[in-house]
Length: 436
Image 1 (cartoon, rainbow, N blue to C red):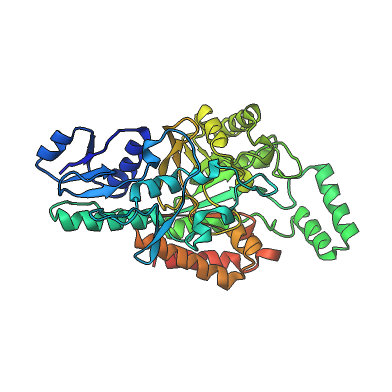
Image 2: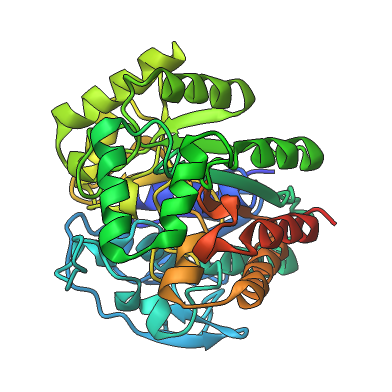
């Protein structure tokens, strides 16, 4: 049964947001109209969205955001709503919800606040702590999904015959391969440099470990790939690997694609799972360099690349996404924060990137991740047990809305050595919790 939605003006923002909430999240077919007479005479479920209510028919009061075309400073107020908060409160009787749920969802999913002047971190990244969600202690809530369910319940109360298809919870493990090996296949100069670094630091344990790995007496501590394959088989996982293959520098330290061992590993990963590009730190906003990295990895795999996640999660909106689109990348997995766990776009579902600079919807699919190993260990300073507790809490949040939980970890972490002791066991326990 199609719902007719009356709006005073149909804009790209209006169409994008209603498509996201009604069609994608609630599986509700709808049509937009600006014809008030058509709306009044329609014999079916309907909703008006605007400043004024049409008769006594269902109505959601709107703010201006979805009818604008430019990026402006917004008056970001909130209202308490069913245990969370709603953005852009609306006042007066008759509104279906006490805040503009459509404008609020657009504001979060479009990452509107990231286009406004902000203090960035040392890598030029927008900071989690600058978000409205963090300030209101809501970053770990998939707000858009929660709001959509509340909208569904209100529509269902008015139109009991409306049917909504329930989404299914999905867990997607992703692995960033920043450095395939800690010691092996580094070449003469990097290997000698490693020994010298251990010597000058007085790291006898590191010296011994490096020597034993290079002599074949011990497994390289970053080589956790067999363990990953075991988990993949045991839990029927469908992981995605993001491979760093930029030229070596201070922030990009993987093995050269010219090394046969690295090429063989990449092919092996490609036999077991999807593989995407992990654009290097140095390729940030550098189109030719990014193109070269994509071409190099594609040549090894003998297939085009369509997936991407930025190294260091270094992303600038909209520039980073515009460059990915230009290079025919269709899916990006960078949408998340390094310093905080939770939902950077306020949603636990894939969505199309809306380019606010050009005020248009694109075909780039954004896959937001909820949690990264380094966030827990390095930024939040959590131990293994505390990290598992946080991970389970976020899984519960996503399961409650039947969303997608994307987890980001590294092969180094799953090696379980040094600073990552206990983390392979933590990951297995998390998988058991997810699939129990």
